[in-house]
Image (cartoon, rainbow, N blue to C red; front, side, top):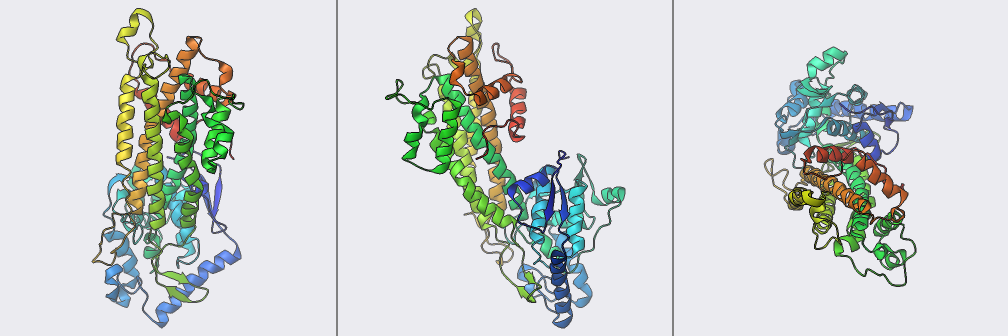
Length: 517
């Protein structure tokens, strides 16, 4: 089940944002544009299709088979059954099931695309998706089986099946037969019109939904890695002036400059000396704005790609009801999302690598400027048998390695399929899934790094080696918030539950980090 969310998102009125999709994913309600203009546009598309069917009798995917089977004529008596067959023969998805939140995001992205008014779908279909969203019913969608063209056919077939009362849904934390849930709530299954099965399934909505969710997680991670870097710098007693404004003015990448400014603020380091007493920290501290800045600088570009795809009509054929044309093309091709996700997963993996290197310094007494080995908080005769964060660092290395391994670009692994009709495909959905896995692993690294960096700062405080004024109010708030939920490690103890708790905090974007710019 999703969280309560008081937002109400209108579809078919104006362009939606990544944040709108995330709001729906997290429980916001949906409604359709009820303006006469929008209503008429939807009606014109449906009416044109009906006239064309009567007058000419041949429409791809309506009176013909699909894909390579487009030369197969469908007898008039079977036309109404064709979309039902499309939804059913694509019911072969495998792998893990999309979460309730992810499936709600899919509902939002598909509804947004169909609301462009050029897919030839009826108000009944649009309203049925709204009904699913507002009753918090999510299709049970297996993750695997899409090559990203003709869009997300197989995973979207599970959405189509839900609308007509078939297969299973996620409802109130359980997997249940759709028909059973519909009966319980008094929801009538719809009957798909001739083009509606194709319109529902032939598009990029699964990869785009996952991309929206990935974007918000990445945005938060970039800020969190900045906050952790500041904490590590305090713990290491590093050189605050690696982040000087004049220094970054001569390499003016805006995102990089933003990260450096955040670090300056965190470290209260606005007035540098003529020459630093501590010359140069290792690259994982000194170059942190450059690494995190790659994410920060890519975000506006990635947003443009994702939101453009979100607000596009991406099925085939396009039904131009205004000019009465059927336009055959390839808008189902998810290349832009594939590129966005391949790019993002590389940048996020670099964040994991950055934190891994910071932790290697922080826990090694040979490099950590006087901190105890492995950040143990034990003192005196108990110190030799305590190992602090030693195993956590091994975990950080493992999670980082796996994140790096998953950066192979998916978009270059196109496979010719479906009797060579789909002979060049995007792999956008696989790229998005890869990106989510890299995000998950990097969030694990970040959770461990956050705890370790707070442990380091707390050690300095307990040894009277910490100037509280060296830390901004914002940085102290995060430090105190972590310590309110995490017991300073003195005696060795299992840390799994602590790590899982803080991973959840990160995924919830629990702490406000930096003011919006």
